[in-house]
Length: 266
Ligand SMILES: [Zn+2]
Image 1 (cartoon, rainbow, N blue to C red):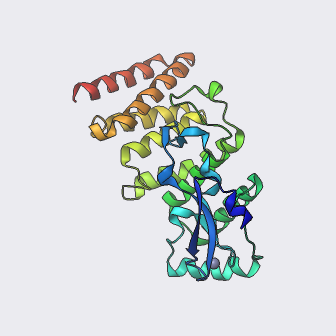
Image 2 (cartoon, helix red, strand yellow):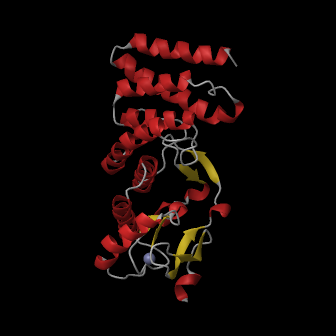
Image 3 (cartoon, rainbow, N blue to C red):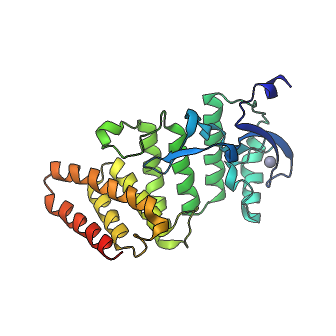
């Protein structure tokens, strides 16, 4: 096939089985084993070397029944959810095949179909929240620098912020009600993520609250958490500048004190 020849080396074709209708189909997927992560952005989106942006290819859609989900969760479906997809989505779905290389519009359509399946299937808060986060990642038009920038400088577009907003209450609920690890995140990582999303939405008091949750976590100074600790500390600093601008110096000092305390217990 001509299209196959033009696939970039980081994409490959794979056969998928639909857990909803049982049909098989081919789709293209990023070859993550070949993609090197340069660094992780403040919202935990990986930034890959060579400017490769694989996020358009992270949703699988069944050509036959219309079931769609993030590829890494595509096969996770219980009997009730299967019935919901078969009764609600399948009858209205017009069979369609996506080309090996997607346009922006096609990639967006796949995410929208995933949202539809997610609603019909009554996903857990963590799963729905994670889908919203991944959708925000998809809508980022360029990577953020590794070191967090203040909101004005980061200049994230409104669609990204909208999906942060959708993700937040779900992730907060999951933090309280679900068992860790949650989508690969430990408590500290999820608390940081919630904090940074609040910061991006200019909920400064909530950011402060979640930073405190991070500093109260006993694992914060463990070696395996050193990368997330760096991110927490960077968020604290950028939040502090905003806090000083808003004349809440005392809160900023309290957080600084908490960080120093955590480090001294190391
Ligand atoms: Zn199907």
